[in-house]
Amino acid sequence: MSQEPQSYRGESTRAVHSGEERSKFARSLTNPIAQTATFVFDNLDEFTDFKAGKVKHFEYGRYGNPTVRVAERKLAALEGGEEALLFPTGMSAVTSVLLAMLRQGQHVVFMEDCYRRTVQFCKIIQKFGVESTAVPPGDWAALEAAVRPSTRILFAESPTNPHLHVVDLERLVPFAREHRLKVLIDSTFATPYNQRPLEYGVDLVIHSATKYLGGHNDLMAGSVCGGGAIIAGIKDFRNVVGTMADPQSSYLLIRGLKTLALRMERQNTTALHMAQYLEQHPKVERVYYPGLPSHPDHEIARRQMRGFGGVVSFDVAGDLERTRNFIHALRLPYLAPSLGGVESLVSHPATISYYDLSAEDRQAIGIKDQLVRYSVGIEDEEELLEDLEQALAQV
Ligand SMILES: *Cc1c(COP(=O)(O)O)cnc(C)c1O
Image 1 (cartoon, helix red, strand yellow):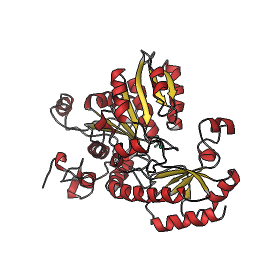
Image 2 (cartoon, rainbow, N blue to C red):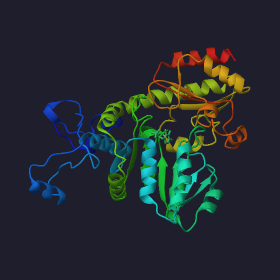
Image 3 (cartoon, protein in one colour):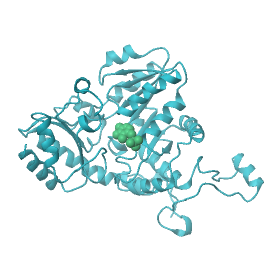
């Protein structure tokens, strides 16, 4: 009955079973939620044995929890990494990892089109004496020029938000090795179903588990996955700063992860069809989707990804007014700032994510007024396309 996680071969088998004990508390089938702040010892000898590594035991909620642990083991199995850690949000994963790894006088290179809050954090850490340089995606000359003797980390996202640029990992990892840099990839938009950065030699993979990993728009979490030694250092740091995930969200994540492959297959297919449909539509000026041959990174994505993900970005032909009308005419997707869940969501980056930038500053980073980001849910493709059709007919 009991099996070692290594013997779970397929993507979905691993998603359902890995990280879990076959025999759980009170023989319950699903994983119990250990809703506790601390853990009990019989006597001081047991505590001493625990500290000496002779017995397995949890100690205090900030250092570890059995429900969180199952979610972490499952994530590590899906990503193909030795160890994983779970955090309360994607941003707490990003910030904890960077703070744990960097010290005063060091330097980070990140891609200009990283998640906006990550970019902001790279500026915030200046107050701790950590410098950073942003480089445009795919600009190898700029990347080469940005690296300094003090550079320690290369941080990239793949695919990026909202233009879905894909970083060429076969080229990035050797570049980083040559310059003795650690490579961190925020792989939120891809999920381990579509892309496995660790197989290319990337050091750490970060996710906002709020998105596809949770998959149901009902939890917030973040994760980092990689080799045992580097993760152990980050865990020591997490023990101190306290960015520990909670058991309720971990349970929801365990539950959500079980259907990851099913959801991703569906979302990959629907998004590709939606991108193809939009690309031939006269009222759409341009579509950004790595699964389309027209995308600048299509060839890289084809080599590196199993599917191209569930987000499609596009420019509506016309101006801001027409784009607003189009978004307001959509009936199925909710208008909300997230992605990756079972419910389709639509976003207008110029209004929602970049509302505080001037029109000129938005233009400079390619966020046009006509840009729409559509996160495809698991609704039936036919209805999603019909809804797009009727909304485009109204502009
Ligand atoms: C949402 C997101 C984050 C931040 O995650 P939260 O869970 O919202 O804190 C980081 N990176 C990417 C690519 C994201 O989409």
